[in-house]
Image (cartoon, rainbow over all chains, first blue to last red; front, top):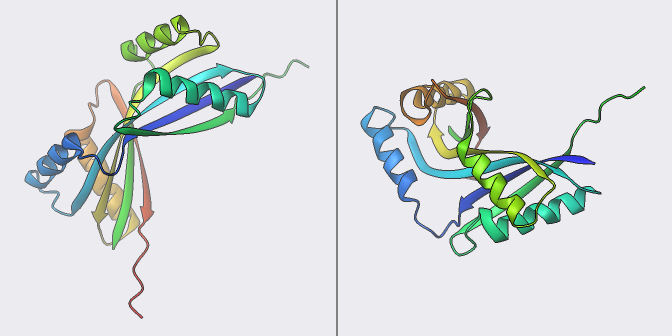
Length: 89
Length: 89
C-alpha cells in the first residue's frame, strides 16, 4: 500500500538557531517589529510503499536516523497518511 | 494578541527538486527501495503580535513576499494559531 509520509526536522529547542535569529533581525529591520522567536526547520515529503501504516512509519524513522536528520542537534516528527487508492471498478 | 505562525515553503511542483532527487538516490542506495517522490521544503515558525488572526496572516504573507520565499520558484502556505493566553486570575 502507498503512504504519503511527511517528516518535519527541527533543531532541538536547546540548540541556538542562527539562521532563525538572522531572519528575525532582518524582519525587524524591514519594519516587522512584532515578530519574535523565529525558528527554521525543514521537511521532507515522500511516498513509501509499505504493508501497513506502522511499517511506513518505521521505515521513515529509520531513514531519519540513517540520513535525513542529525540526531545530535536535530529532532524529527513523522506523519503518515494513507494515499488514496485508485478506483479499479 | 499573540499568534503562533507556521509558514511552509516548498518549491513549485513544476520546479525540479535537485536536493530531493539526490536524497532519494541516496535512500535507494542505502536499501530503502520503496521510496519515491522525495521532495524537500522548509518551514519557519514564529510568534506574531497582532490584533486578529487575519492581521497575523497578512503580516506573515507580507514577510514571505518580502524576504522568506522566492516567488519565482517557491510557493508558501501560512498557518496561524492563537497562542494560549496566560491566566491572570
